[in-house]
View 1 (cartoon, rainbow, N blue to C red):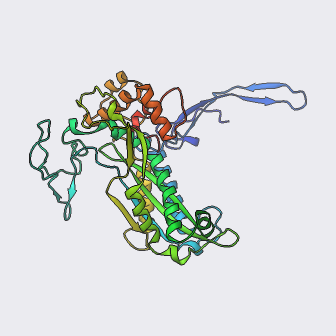
View 2 (view 1 turned 60 degrees about the vertical axis):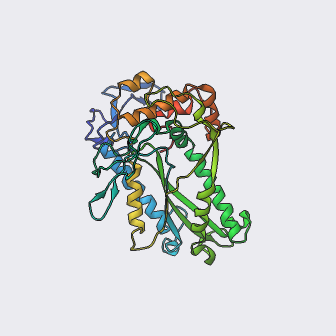
View 3 (view 1 turned 180 degrees about the horizontal axis):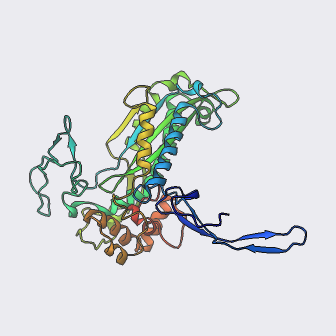
Length: 390
């Protein structure tokens, strides 16, 4: 152990701006007599915090981002663990997929036109039931603070928005399972037979949008399997667009059931709930209509290097710029002390209002496959607007 206290710029902490102080002691043992002698000196060492969020620690975040980029590049190029021949698998078919959330209410957005010029936000006429204009004639800039804010906060469905974020991992799992079944059916195989012929692997990154809903960016790669179970070039039927076509069909129909939050009173500043509760108390969680599926091709707009850079960028993004929600919200009183935009505050508050309804919160955890704990998931992950992943 070093005898001098290390500064954040030295030793194992590198240039970490929030190093962790490890305090301990060093003992010497005489092997002949068994005597233990404590060594004097300052027993403090600084190590990296290893926080992936750029708002928390830019240095550790940059290291995390570089490592993630190399992992994605290795997977796309066939240099993943267990594969001894990187060049042989580099031509296996792969796609870059973006999956979005449904609309829970109109929000201000920047609709890019040619060059750096943007178009009008929303060309709509009339007013909503709360008397607010349905349209917005502003051409928002890239740094406009209104981007992602609801056009009418009282029309935005905060309850279902945070439930959708909560159910996203379960929805993704259902999508993977359905995709495997759909591909097997289209190829004239059983699921077991499909697994003997190909391996479909994924890497995904969650991006928290300004409107407070998560998008998934997914890379899908298909490898063939030989008679011994080793990886080889994908078979001809998998090299085309069959898998992408099956994915489009699955995304349009797959849903998972969650308890409907519309039956729980949200006494927040947004006002009354914008929707009526379902008759059976279930809310079918599905994907939004905006789905982007692109083939990854060398030298194109979606080649391996650009995709790896794109995914690595979102791995280090915080829920909210500035890092105000990088740690858990402990109570509504704690939330009141945080400096947050109104929309993000309402999302966190919706998590707490729903989470304090114990029966609803436990039913949601059961639907999401979360292990029961002392704190329900909506409260534990309110700083992620209900989303408990990374």
